[in-house]
Length: 385
Image (cartoon, rainbow, N blue to C red; front, side, top):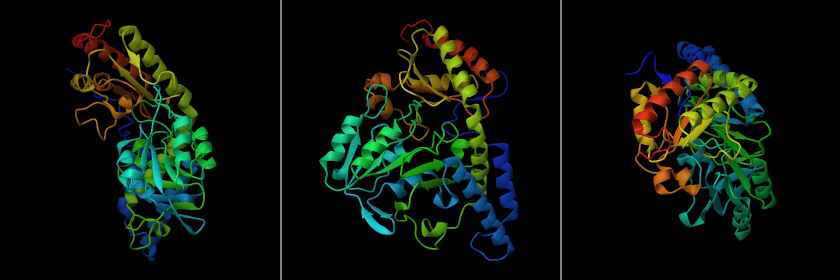
C-alpha cells in the first residue's frame, strides 16, 4: 500500500497546475467579460488576453503579434498541417507533406493532405531524423513541401537537430512546422529556426484548453475556424479567457524555469544512475542522443510498460507508458518501433518525466518504490519476468 501522498512523475502528459496559473484563471473567471465587447468588462478581458499573448511571445522569443491562441496543440496541428497557406500576403499551396515517424499522434493523424502526398521521415536507432532521407524526400518533388519535425519527443525526450533540419528544408524551398510542446520551459525557443511552432498551456502548468501557433515570419496556414474574426482573423471563436490567462501565467513561470535546467538535468541523471544500480539490466532509450532535461524513458527485460505503470500506481506513483494520448491503448509504442525496436520491446517503454514541482525528496521516494516494484516483477537483477 502507498505511504504518504501520491507522487506525480508524469509531467510530459500534463504538468500540475501552477499556483500563479490558478490565480490568473480564477481572476479571469471572476472578472468575466467577452474580449470582443467594447464595454469596460470586455476591455478588461481583452487586456488579460493580450498580457497572456505577450507572455507566450516571450517564451517563444517572438513579438506578441506572432502568437495565435488555439484550443490546444491538437487544433494547432490540424490547422498547420494543411496544403493552403499564406506567405507575405500571397497564397502558398503545398503539394506534399513530410512528417517524421516519431511525431506525437496529433501530428501523425492531423494532416489534411491526400494520403498519396504524405511521406514519413525515418529516424535512426537513437530517434534522430535521418537528414539524408529528408534531402532525398525533398528532392523528389513535385512542388514545395510542408515538413513537420518535432523539437523534442514526448516519450523519449530525444531532441532533434532542428537547425540542420531547417537548413535542409530551406534549401529546398519548403516550410518547417515544429512541435515545441514538450520543449517549452525546458529548452530555449527563441533561436529555434522553424517557420511555425506549436505550444500547449497544460504542458507547462496551465489549464487544458489553450494552445498556440507561433509564426516566425509573415506566413501561416489559412484559418481552420472562420466566423467572428477573433485572433486577428486567424482563428474564430470566443477566446477561452481563463485558460488563456492561465497559459500566460504559466509561460511567465516557464521562462524562469530555464534558469534551473541544470538542477533538473542533475535530478534526471541521478535517478538514471540509481535505477541502473538497482536494475543493471535497465536500458535507457535514446541515451546516445541529446534529450530533454526532465525525461527518462527506460525498459526492463520481459516487463510490459502497462504492467509497470499499474504496479507503480498501486504504490502511489504516477508514471506512464509513452504518450498520454495513446498509452491508454494496449500496443507497442510507434516511437520505439520507428527507432528499430521489436514489437515486444516497444511495449516496454516506461516514461518518468519530472517538472516544475519535482523535488529531490520525490526522486528519493521513487527510487525506493522502484526497488520494491522491480523485485516483485522479477527484473531487479536482469532476469526476464
